[in-house]
Length: 322
Ligand SMILES: Cc1ncc(C[n+]2csc(CCOP(=O)(O)OP(=O)(O)O)c2C)c(N)n1
Picture 1 (tube, rainbow, N blue to C red):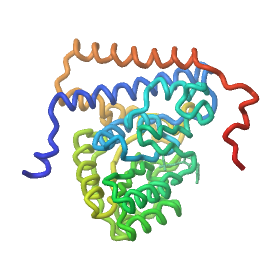
Picture 2: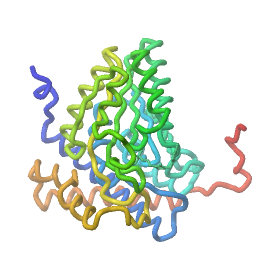
Picture 3: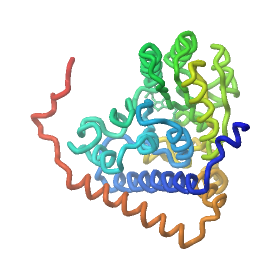
């Protein structure tokens, strides 16, 4: 059987992907709303438009496979099994949050679901993924470690060091580059001297796969191939998912660096959610049932978070080791 046939998904599975992507979208829109209302503090980076990458990749993983994420992490966390309650409570700084209220948006951990954490340091997640994958290899465990990062992160030393050692040691890792074509306010062409990012992996002799990150079925098929390659002991894979952020770099970003009309055009042409809805032919009734279900989960997470337990001032130094 050809790989495309082996990885072709049932309508039921794709419908579950649609629900997950919609949950992520509505969750993040709610986060934006609560941030603007003054409920949430700190910096928030949402991933509107990038949901298909998180869902397509994470749905190929087992619970004990691990991921590491970035400053833009909510979609990865939800896709890897974190509950909306645990995530929202963390954003509200509550004890019930996934990091006990100490982390906030850029420090989200969920070891039980194989999430080694978000990371505020660009490129900071990759070395740990090489380490985790090396441990799996040395223990002869059939597990895979996956790093998510953006195009901007491929300019960091830790990216190059991680791909170098990962390939040298033939570790079971997948390096997922979510190329949303911007690093903060800088378009890729102004922060990288090359257009084809796979050449960076090629420099280490690493296999690359390129995929349309707005097509969740394609992402799932590409990730299935990459994860199978790594799990079989053939070494790491660089998975380049071309995607678009349909919003600012951070919540509140005035986006003066974008060409006029770009965001509107991208929303009209590059939104992975209507694309999947259309593919599946979801009618108005089924869509509104899906919206109602997802909205209930999101609203419940806000209630859960608001009713959560505040940290006490005397807890401030707990977990401080140095
Ligand atoms: C080591 C380091 N340098 C700079 C920053 C500031 N910074 C935060 S996000 C960001 C852009 C990252 O771009 P990319 O990796 O493409 O991810 P995206 O924001 O597009 O998801 C930068 C430069 C940082 N957090 N860490």
